[in-house]
Amino acid sequence: MSELMLLKNIDNPDASRIETYEKSGGYQGLRTVLRDYDPDQVIETVKSSNLRGRGGAGFPTGLKWSFVPKDNPLPRYLCCNADEGEPGTFKDRILMERDPHQLIEGMVIAAYAIGCKTAYLYIRGEYDVSIEHCQQAIDEAHALGYLGQNILNSGHSLDIHIHKGAGAYICGEETALLESIEGKRGQPKLKPPFPAVAGLYECPTVVNNVETLACLPHLFRRGEDWFSSIGPKDAPGPKLFGLSGHVRKPGLYELPMGMPLGEMLEEYGGGALNGAFKAAIPGGVSAPMFPSDLFDVKMDFGSLAAAGSMLGSAAVIGLDETASIPVVARRITEFFNHESCGKCTPCREGLTWAAKILRRIEAGQGQVGDVEQLEMLCGGIFGKSFCALGDGAAWALGATIKHFRHEFDALIAPQTMVS
Amino acid sequence: MSDARSLTDIKRDLATGVRQMRTRYPTSRSAIMPALELAQQKYGQLEGLTYQAVSELLDVPEIWVFEVASFYSLFDRAQTGLHHLRLCTNLSCMLRGSDALMQHLQDRLAIKSGETTSDGSFTLTAVECLGACEMAPALMVDARYHGDLTTDKLDGLLASLAGRPAKEAT
Image (tube, rainbow over all chains, first blue to last red; front, side):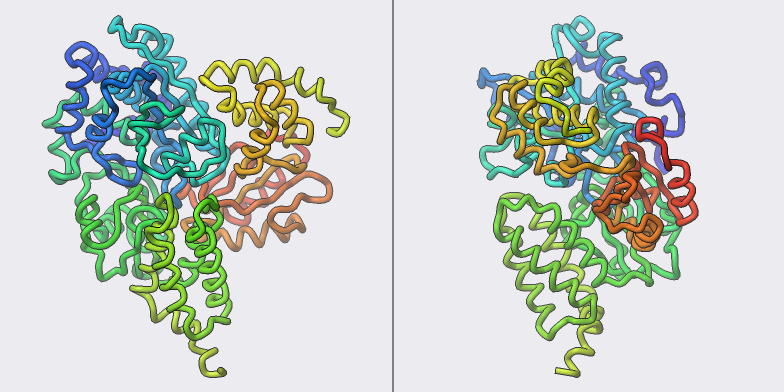
């Protein structure tokens, strides 16, 4: 068990205050950066550290920053994506509520690297305590010269504004998030252009997740060697895993990536709530589930991708033997259907139909051919919309059928006898 | 009561706050969401003339304001109860019994999800993931989270909320 970093102060009731944060090494990473690094060196260090985005896609953070054009005269923006909404995910909320200065310090470092003077922190509207604690952290950082004009006499300036979301899962998608800050409906835009080139107000923009940014102070305070020593080579650094659902000990755990899914569920989740596990979702409901005989899959970006799923937001949801997979599939599909922004037809219409079919299967009114119809809908949605919402929905539903077809058939079977 | 509020009243109530929000962004349009949030905090929900007031204060078309208000689920465009109960029914909460809790709340309050009690005390809404899965099943009451819920806990919560305004309860 490695040393805790992101969660090291989490049980300290004063962890959200700047004095507590400074006492445990807080803002040392920023001091080091401003003293010893020019912006390009920060980008190079983050690149070579192989820090990968913790929001869902796992894209290399330094590489993302390097796409910001050097010769563009427009202002550059940094937006922190704290619109946490992937079902099963609560890691960013806990970071922001309990130890928000990690995020603020990380934002100052990232802004310095990309040459940004105004940053937005987009927090979902339900996260009242996060908003309160982040605003307090911003105010405290201002008072001590870590934010505002000429930070620590470096010549670098930054203001951070909180933009409060108002209940829309889709705003976690980066182009929708930017639309939302611009005061529009949160509807994704076709990429390219990518935000690094034309993002917020058509200016070069970097969008990073809370946990990704919170890793930065530790990376620069403790150094690259320390960072790379945690977890596998292609997925280094501290990582948060949120365990929920049918586990005995739901909660947030900081663990190196690469641990087998089954070990995580048993050792940290405390095992299944009732009997044994039937399946588990490894990275939020968009991530295809694994039946328990595939629980030796390792929990890192590459291993999960190779096994046909993804690390996503690292929200692990345990499903024990009392769970009905068709009911789980129906609930997940209803969620995606509800949150589809309606812009792209395959996602909007396909999910409406999939949810209808799943409801009738659950009600015992399924018809022969319904499962094939669902599979066809999945194929019609996947890869055919602007953003990943429809992809996630089709992918997750497809996995429930692939691994648990017999449960769907068992619900449909009685009708086939009659007809 | 809310019908009596004039455009002038609303604009006067919101002017200072909206002006302050406006300074955070390079465009007026960006301040629409925070302005609506401000209005909802003040009045409990968004009403007919609020859209016009925000549009005039920010000098943006009223349709832009309405587009935003009608897209985001936390903006209430109809009168809600004194307390808004938002019960998470997404997967992690469902696996830990949120369906039974929803049934219990509907029975106790004699309303369906999406409705408000006849005395105006409670609005009940089934919502998507609140990001509180470690304390599933979870519920948001006004602006605050409550977790590890049971029917007994819900009953206690309802009793403690009855008759108290939202601000006091949070």
